[in-house]
Amino acid sequence: MERIWIKQPLAVFTANQLDATNGIVIEGDRIVEVLGAGQEPASPCNTVIDARDQVLMPGLINTHHHFYQTLTRCCPPALNKKLFPWLQTLYPIWAGLTPQMHQQSSKLAMVELLLSGCTTMADHHYLFPQGLESAIDIQAETALSLGVRATLTRGSMTLSQEDGGLPPKSVVQSEQTIMDDSTRLIQKYHQKDDRQLVEIALAPCSPFSVTTDIMKESARLAREHQVHLHTHLAETEDENNFCLEMFGLRPLDYLEEVGWLHDRTWLAHGIHFNDEEVKRLGRAGTGICHCPSSNMILASGICRVKELREAGCRVGLGVDGSASNDHSNLIQEVRQALLIQRLRYQADEFSHLDALYLATKGSAEILGREDIGELAVGKKADIGLYKLDEPRFSGAHDPLAALVVCGANQANSVMVNGQWQVKDREWLGGDLQALMADHHKAAKSLYQ
Image (cartoon, rainbow, N blue to C red; front, side):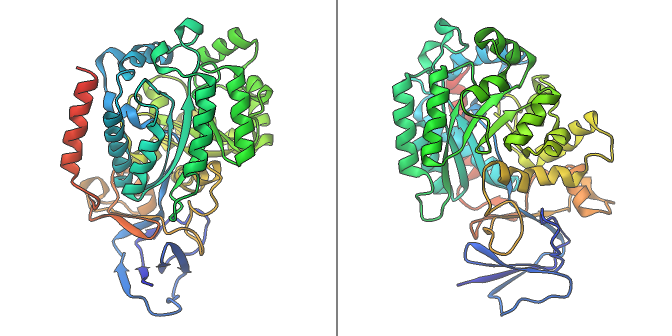
């Protein structure tokens, strides 16, 4: 079995304070040695990579996305709108999504994330217009073919505009269809592939887009199969008010009522929680995915990351959908997380290292993954290497700070499960220009 020594990196972020000054050794799909200053590998290595000009980090982990939205970036009718009108504008467009469009949008999003140094990608897909019933299968097969790690959440919507919800009837499904398909997907894909690349979670779009029965049944099914739960929550004050009108409860109270307030749940956004709710989330160990760029573009607010972490919440990072970001670049999102948190906290209360932690070990924690997100012996060989050789980095003194503050936007090399997927800033899995051409054509077909 090949032994790879990534030797003497320019700087290392391990996410766990281990000394990896002299690099790491990889064997198969695992990290087998973490070498401190002056340490050498215990036995010879087949390949030695001189990393003196590169920053070494765990592969980044994206915990909230909507891959299909890469087809509607900067869509004119949806620009400069708040969340609810933005959704109501885009739902009729998204209703035209076809299987081919979905495959191309998912592949483009995964590759875009990969090029940024992201090795694990969680997607939240909840739109199932007629003909797209196999949306999650398409994503699973795409992830497996690319060799990337994916947590695919089987989303759902049952309440159309006719039922008091936001989406048109053409994109919602019946409760029986949703639960049957959720069971099928867990049985078919969850941790079933030999590389352990794909996991399944259950993810009603939001508490106000599905019935109470779907929320409760999803919780029951997730408990039965020991999979995670995911949904949007407390993204805007409008959402909080909507829940009060619909259920007579604030979103978190409703979440607890339907059996979701526990440590196998993670929530997208989690902005508008009051002090008491933050404490309850912490006691439950519930995860929160911070989505800074999307929150800024939709003017939703700023997640209370510091208070949530201090309360006991696991907090990670996500790019959110590419119609509200509008990129799928997780290393850029790390910088955005630093900047937006500096608007809430003092400069010495949230650092570039805190931002990097959100995108690595913090994200691994909210997905319940103990095998990724840090550089340590026994962890999966998911890593990113970054060069600081562009004008934006010239004159920088602290490499880790430079990576975040100066604004890295692409990894030099990326490994997933012990296999190189990016080298010299080039995706090794196919023709990027051809992928972009096909994807752009699909985007034009969906909206012109």
